[in-house]
Image 1 (cartoon, helix red, strand yellow):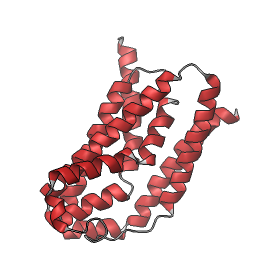
Image 2 (cartoon, one colour; image 1 turned 45 degrees about the vertical axis):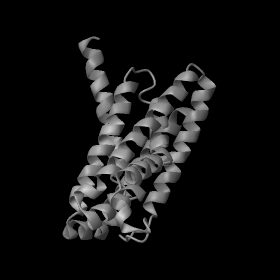
Image 3 (spheres, one colour; image 1 turned 135 degrees about the vertical axis):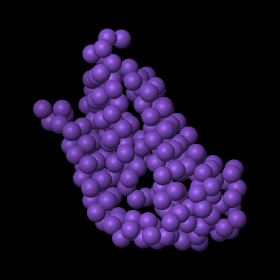
Image 4 (cartoon, helix red, strand yellow; image 1 turned 120 degrees about the vertical axis):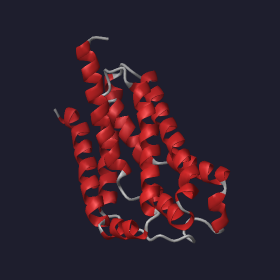
Length: 213
C-alpha cells in the first residue's frame, strides 16, 4: 500500500470514528444502563455490560459490511441504500433531538439489584441491546455505501466500532460512578442531544445528496 493510500485510509477511519463518537455520546439505553450500573454497583459492576455492548456493536458492523459486500456493484441497490440509510439517519436524528432526559433508576432496568453482579447476565444484556441497536446499523450502513464504499478498511472499521464502544462504555462507567458527574450529564442532556442529533441529520443529508443530483 502506497503512502497516499495509507493516508487516505487513516483519514477515512478518523472521520468514521468521529461520527461514531457522536452516536456514542448521545444519551440513550446504553448510556443509561451503564450509568445505572456504575451508580449502583460501581465501576466493576458495569464491566460485563460494556464488554457485551462492544461485542454486539462489532458484530453489527461486521454483518453490515458482509451484507453490502454480497450485493456490491449494483448502482440501483446503492441508490436505494442511500435513500434508506439517509432517511433512517434523519429520523433517528429527530428522535434524538426530541428525546427526554432519562432518570437513573435501578427498578427501570433490573428487578433484582444483585443481577448487576452477574457477569453472564451483564454480558448477554449488553450484547443483545447492541445487536438490536438501529443507530449503529444505520450509521455503518451509511458509511459502507458512502465514504468507505471504495476502500479496504472494513476489517479495521469493525475493530474500531468494537473498541470505541468498549472504551466509551468504560469511560461512562468511570464518570457515572461519581454523583456530581451524573448530575451534570443529565442537567445538560438537551444540549448533548441537540448537537448529536444535528450531526446525524447532516450525515443523513450527505447520504441523500448523490440521489438528488
